[in-house]
Structure formats: C-alpha cells, structure tokens
Length: 311
Image 1 (cartoon, one colour):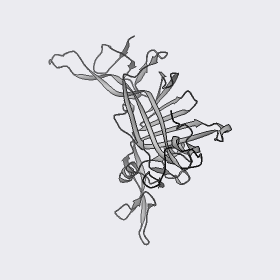
Image 2 (tube, rainbow, N blue to C red; image 1 turned 90 degrees about the vertical axis):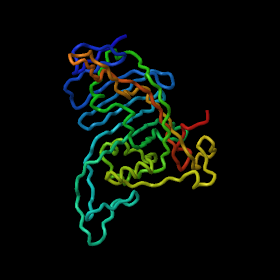
Image 3 (tube, rainbow, N blue to C red; image 1 turned 120 degrees about the vertical axis):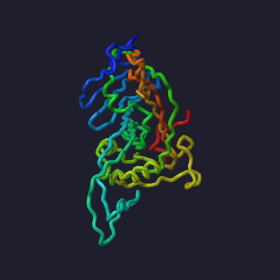
Image 4 (cartoon, rainbow, N blue to C red; image 1 turned 90 degrees about the horizontal axis):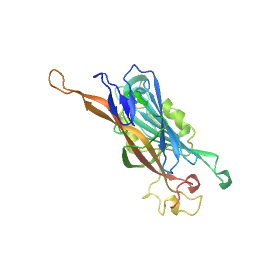
C-alpha cells in the first residue's frame, strides 16, 4: 500500500504511508472521511472538516451505542466585542463587565486568540429507566496546538484508499480534565456563535475549567456567566457516581472518549542536494495519533451520569 504527496518545493512524487496531500489553492471547507476501528471493536467513520475561513477543524463520529461525538479545534484569531471603561477593562467571571455610575463606556473590537477546544457528546437515553430521550454534554477548554495540525494543512489532506480501516501510528495517553465550572446556558448570550450552536442543548451538562476562564478573560474574550461547582473538599461524603446507590444523590461523574485517528504532526523530508549542495526540508506528510479524554465533573444527582458504571 503506497500513497503520494506533492509539494511546491520539488517536482518528483515522494511515497508516504497514508495520505495524499496536494498543495493547491484551497476552498473554504475541505472534508475527509476516515474509517477507523472504535474502542468497542466496531468499524466507524470519522468525518474531519477543515474550515479555512473560520480557521477551525471539526471531527465527528458515532459510537457503537449511538452516541454522536463532535470535537471542534478552533484556532481562529477572533475580534471580540469588549466594553471598555475609561482606560481599563473591569470584568469578572461572575458578574461580567462593571460600569461605575458616571463612567462612559464604548464598544470596541480587539483581536484575541481563542484557542478553544469544544467536545460535544449527544448521548441517547433509556426512557424506560426514567432517562430523557437524549442528553447533551459540552466541555470547553483551551486547545493544545500540538494536538492536531493547523487548519491550512488539514485542508490539503487527500485520501487515496478511503475504504481502508486506518490505525493511528501513535497511541497517546488520556488527557484528564477536571471541569470545575458550569456554564449557565440561559445566560450564555455572550458566547460566540460556534459554542452557542453546539452547546445550546446542554442545559445540565455544560462545563469548563477555572484556569481556562481566567485565561480567556485575560485575553479579552467576551465574558460568560460561570458557576463554580462543588469540589470533593467542599462536600462531605461526596462520592464518585459508580459508588453512589441513590439515583437522586449528588456525585462526581466521569465521561470518557477517544479520538481514534487525528493528524497530529507534520512530517518533513529532505530534497535532493541542489547545485549549492544543500538539502532543503519540506513538508511531505503527516503523523497520525489517537488520543483519549476523561472529563470529571460534579452532577446534582446520579441520574445525570448513567454511563459511569463500575466495571
């Protein structure tokens, strides 16, 4: 099995092991469908969509139990609307921007790096067990740029044999995220459109982290109404959900997922030595990775965490 990649720096093709990347003028969106083996052993399909205009990458797939997973990696340098008061910005995660009596304010636009990762899970419920037909979870956190290649390169990936089942070259560990802040969906009007559209149905399952909210606030990103969640040290006797017998007792829930195939790194090759005797490196492919995520968070009753069971 062989594949080809073409680069601007050289004319001859270079054989690589997985994908064809053609450096051509790009459209706004580019979609790649990759067949993968899911953690339950079933064959699934990941849809990777690179939006060059918005500078984000969306990965979608359906698990064997019907759960629909959407992960968005948002790199874009946004222009955030900020209320400026005098020469300073007065804001807090709890109350938003404060304008003192007699002060003048005006709305300005400033470029800010969002670097946001949004994980959305639409989980089918079991009505016969008293559950809703479905439940939506949303986890919003800072994006690690080493997690996936930039949008401009993702948009150039082309697959030669789309019917083959892909296995990632590198299996990365599980990123453990402690989600200690809840986002109030009903007061999330300041959220930018992408998060709002993905998470508007996550009425009892929209989470982020204190450190991330502070980072975004420091960057000048529009403020959101957050609510600190109880921690283990705050609630005496609070247990993990699998150890909680009463369905209506609060507990700590965990949600796990794994992306089985991501283009995580760019590969570089060296061209043949030219007249000057130098071999110039050029981008000639990608390295694929799989990566797991574990989200821990507080729920007011175990009924909201039916998937977290003892094994």
